[in-house]
Amino acid sequence: MDFDLLNAVSLLETSNGIVAIPGPEGYGLASRADCTETLERIQRITGSDSTMLLLGRDINAFTPYVETIPKPAFDLMTRHWPGLLIMQLPKASLAPANICTGAFVSLIQPEAPILLDLLSLIPGGLLAISSSGRMGDVSPKTAQAVFDMFGDDVDYVLQQDDAVPQSEVATVVSIDQDGEIHLLRSGRIVLD
Image (cartoon, rainbow, N blue to C red; front, side, top):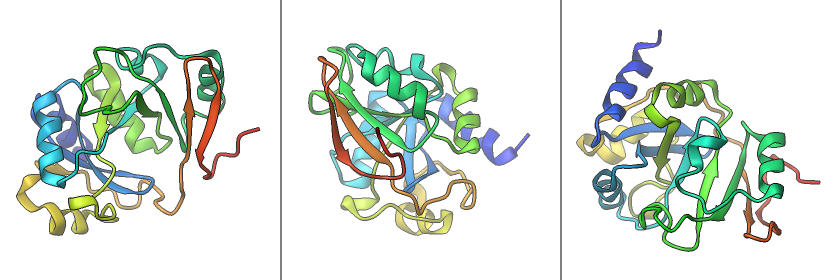
C-alpha cells in the first residue's frame, strides 16, 4: 500500500485534517465534507469564500448534499463518471453553506486512480476540495508549490504530482430540478 496515501487518509479521518490533493486543474485543499469548522479553516487559509467542489467515490456519496438527482443528471453520471465532468445540482436544504453558497452544489467523481483510492478509504467516500490557491490565485501545480504557498497551514500534502494529469479542463454543467442541462464550461467531455 502507498504510505503517502495512508498518511493522507489518516489525517482526513480526523475531523479537522486538511490535506492538499492533486486535481485536474492543480492541487486543492481537501477535508471531510461533514466538518464545518475545517471547511471554514480552508476558506480562511485560501482567503476565499467560494464554494467547494465535492469529490465522491460514487453517486451515493452525494445524496446528503443534493435535493434530487434528476434523470438527465443520473444519465450523464453513469456515462461520464469517473471523468472530467463537474455537475452542479440543486443543493439539499441541510447542505452546509460553505460547500454551496448558492442554490447548487458542485460534484465530480474523479478519474485519477490515486483519488479514487483515497475516496475508497475515507468513510462515506466524500471529500470537499477548494478550487484555488491563496486569495483566488491559480491552484499550485506541484507539491513543492503547495508547500511554498501554504506552508504549515496544511496538515499534509499528497505528493503525487504525476498521478493526475493537470493539463486538461473539466466540462462543467448545471442541471436544474426540471432536468434541464446548461453547459457552463466546455472541457474534455463533449456532451451529445
